[in-house]
Length: 230
Ligand code: AP5
Ligand code: MG
Picture 1: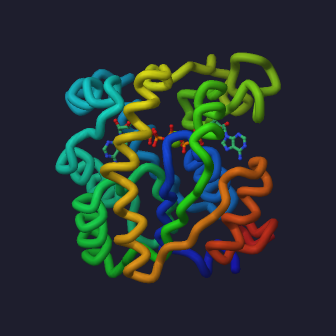
Picture 2: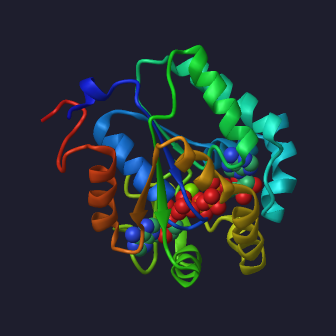
């Protein structure tokens, strides 16, 4: 399958904080020429720009709590409208509640689309905590790990040269809150999408290349396929 045949596909990456949604989302979308829509990245960009949305979101993010559904749905609706419907999309971190999933379904239906596949990335809690503690993030959205995926030049993004940051919500106390918020508010989406026949499970515990290969297989994208089909 190549990028042209896949245009317009909608894939959702679901899974706990630290499981690898960003790592895999950026790789899959980059290879296929699809958009990568990470609501966490959109919120962090708004925060950095000092917009009203960023200021409102900050208190929730710093506490590890979810930003209210209506704020998130408006943000995603605007983002999708600006993008056009002919391009594939990989969602990362959205939807995160059943009301968000229902709203996403309605927004996509207006464009004649639907969520085609939901990939649940799975890993044990101790793996998640180890990954989050070693994470360093680039303002570009790319993520690194001091143990598992270090940048070529320590402390700086390979792509943009920007200094890497340690996310404010990666402190142990906040991580514990985020994990429990995931279990309570987001895990019900597993049943929601399973009941609709679009859920696939992918083992997220292998190394980054192994998970990428399993993800590609799960969504029907051949190993080595690219946007141009080259
Ligand atoms: P968000 O930014 O979405 O954070 P999250 O869901 O907590 O997920 P993470 O970004 O922590 O983990 P990830 O799965 O992307 O893992 P990563 O690839 O970085 O949300 C942040 C906050 O924004 C929320 O708490 C909330 O306040 C708000 N928000 C966002 N969306 C919202 C929504 N829809 N509704 C309401 N509020 C919302 O990987 C982690 C680390 O592991 C990295 O260092 C990486 O290099 C490494 N790694 C990845 N894969 C592997 C591997 N296979 N082997 C070894 N290391 C690996
Ligand atoms: Mg992420």
